Length: 470
Image (cartoon, rainbow, N blue to C red; front, side):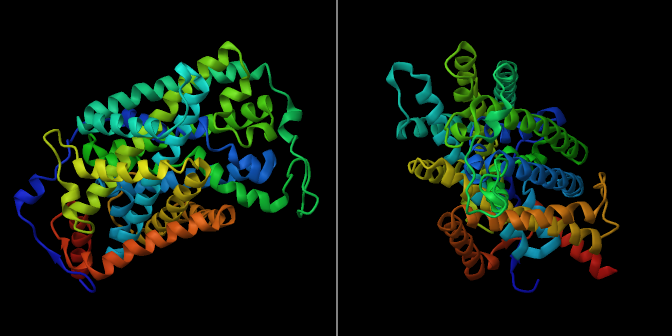
């Protein structure tokens, strides 16, 4: 293969790098998809009110919801055709070759390594607002969160997925309680209480920062859905993945569309756009000091933990797949007796903990969105490429609208990447440098040491052999 060198490894090599199969059905996968994202309902999205006001964030959320729906439908097709633990990396590897596959996997890793750090800061804010025993947000809360939940993952995927499902169900109950309490406090005037910026083009009470505010709000609208694309990472641990992964990711997306609408309108309408725009725990502050606020505060912590917990799972599986195939150091993919990848869980966790010490949740959120949006661009290019180049590839599920659907997601994702530079060019630029560093590592070292008989590489090599025969 031009530009890379692949080598066969022994059966013992792969034996030490096996995940536990048959641990999940589509219901658990749908729960996993919601679990990835549900913290975004409890905190993070509201910083978009500061960027675009309610109108700017609402328009951005509509655009982003459409993008994610198209993205999910495209990924449902790809995951049914290529069910492997690499997720987006597997899809791009088949469509775009080793360089494209590694670039996609790297972007996903940036997203999933940074997102838990952002969520850890929000967990700290919720814990502090509870006022238990004088606890305040601090490094030891972040450390405890990473240590406890990485430890649960090390016990095995079956146990971890069940714990995730229960925590997510509790978090969903919290959203219902919030909605019932917030309806009585809703005031439409609260939606537009940010003073318009007279110098901004198109500024009004609905768009206080003008048309550009819509674009600047996009990274925060993404927080309503960020990481739903991680569902295919569970393919090797799923019963009948060709059928269950598409069903799980689509069902999860359906739930998230509903929660996005409910939270955006009720939090802003009950608490006020200006007041909620800088809040670390907006659902609680929107309800004030009553009993419902205290209940939602406790349950909100469960929502944040659900996403924190599940994204740890996601980064470990992406790192596992890249390592097993030789793109990253191979020791990272060795699994323990419970079939959990030890170093793939621990090392990104250490990095995430160190990042959480900045305490800058909004900054970390923007960095995670950069990685996510870049991966979306590459995955949608992969879908379109495979539709054109391999029209007869077996696809148990086919995306409605085909390349037109994923083409829409591709265009919006490109604008989302640019939007992260509008919000904070330094944060986005740092992520771009990290991405370039990974690609340099691949160019200089790992592209000469790929593992030909890893599942993801075998998918691609079989396709190339078939094309050569044709």
